Length: 230
Image 1 (cartoon, helix red, strand yellow):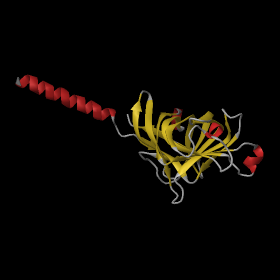
Image 2 (tube, one colour):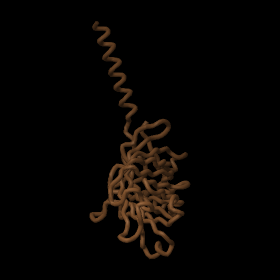
Image 3 (cartoon, one colour):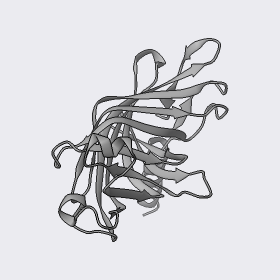
């Protein structure tokens, strides 16, 4: 009985050690003086119940000073966006000092999976979203007929992997089932064009895309940026 109990304790301790090793702390490595710069690969898509918006260009930037850290902060910017289900209406990304925060990364196969939060740094604004315009002229005059807003929240998870030679990381956005609200200007728009539920919160939004993020210093250009934690 003593032998069996000792064996069980040994197995339990070994299992616990393996579990702790599997959950090793994940660190994003970069020099403290380096800034993060990223760009999208292919098409980024944002989907709600009523619309799907495709963007041909995505850019990201992160601040200086954090160095090696357990998380990274990226400010998104999207360009050349149109709706795919509404005959290609122009769409403009709206954000006021809001960032994607990637944190709590865990090993997943050959890479990692990180939680993605939307966090805003302005005291006046707490959301990002999309404005949809019926014509290019309306876009030029900033007269949207639909507005989608995504408040601060946990958006989902992203898959991460290192690029060769510590040249940066690749991010596969896989965000889904997060909240948003669709609105329309008074006297314009309709539930058919703007979404099936106006002025109410839904939780079925999705966002997908791929980006690469590198680190650069002002004087020396590109510098190593990578993840460790195995």
